Image 1 (tube, rainbow, N blue to C red):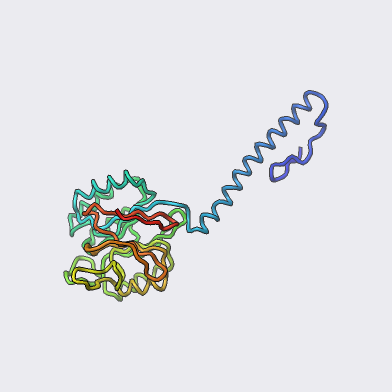
Image 2 (cartoon, rainbow, N blue to C red):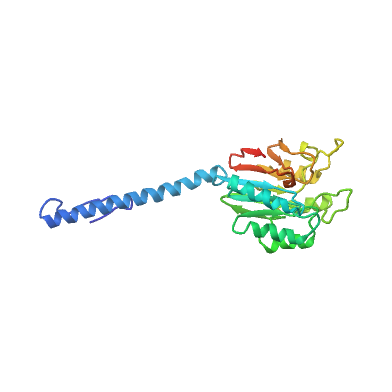
Length: 267
């Protein structure tokens, strides 16, 4: 009984005749129908993937937090957010500690065991915290990774501050780190870009990074999630990029970004 690649029966010998030959024909048709259904399912799944990829990957929900500063209460806040949002992944935009205790970083990651986490360190996080994020396989500082068809990268630390905190980079160093990243869909930065609402501090000065601003305007990531400056939060655009400025998790605040629609809500 020849069967085409699509699962269609091309010919059946003697379809009418003895009971045995009719049974053979019936079984052959049943097999062909099952084959067609199986192939149709397989083909529909193959065809669905390019559609999702054309939109920027498979739909997912990203829970975004920053600036926990070693506060034990933040573990409870995060637990509540996870229960409410049920995200596909968690983005942590730095300042896990205050600086220290380093053990808080470990406690945080232990509480997220089994969940997909992408994180950068903040300017208050020291070398031991940076090393912890790398060892636990969650750091995206200076590197690109893929998740559900979406490219994700990040940068930690901060541009220079008046406070000489543990991890600060010159604008030149930031430029060099960003140069190694290339095009990306979702970018997580501890610090915000310069001359935006995101980088306004008390008194109205802008404290963000000029190097980060230039990179965003050049590379055009679809969304940048950032924290660092505690005075404000909000959503704005810089060129073709959506900027999601987080308030500290210490204030029980977080954001949810839907991918690939970029529908965003701050809570």
